Length: 305
Image (cartoon, rainbow, N blue to C red):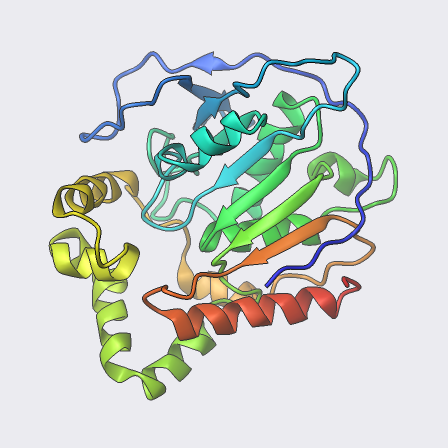
């Protein structure tokens, strides 16, 4: 399911230098970069560093006057980090002519961890994404988010403003487009999970045990069932399981506070193109599809076609 809207061009942003990652790694199971990728640090206004895995376009520019493809910025979900995009998504889109940037949210991957017990809130995570875009990209990007990363992107878009020179435009730079991949819906997962608990109690128990109790970290079969294809080889599942255990040193959110802050604000006067995607073989397919439908109706109710 997808829907597309007209886009608006944005003014050129100032390009800032990156900091190269040259410190001891935080993950005890490091992710080895693929050919053409680099790992850098973006320093946030707080002084904390956010990991970014970069893979520039591998397509040679034929015509300097030809319109350049927008950069792609990827935002992960729970128990993941920038590496999850670096496996397949970054190489694919780099080979298709896009500059790609995969972010590790604070407290995840090789990013610094803030003080406290959780990595942040919708507002702080969206603000970190916006700061990276504003200070490092010279073209309006397409934002791609999976799971809770998609919820962060929804919050980002809801806080953009089309009015020129507005304060919100400075805080949240305009986008060329956005993609929500199996995203948490605007109201969060709580209502969907309760309905899932009634309709499919065994599967709901597995989801709760796997994610809330973190049993996916010790059970190879549950890790595969929750996150991957049933035919994926054990050695690959084990590799990703180890990376996920090391990726999330603290929860992305305080879920109680997050649920109290939802739904995300209505998106007004926004002309950003949005693509909403789901996967039919998702382990929690009913929850996922209901969430996708909710996101679709939420966006169309706010002026999208």
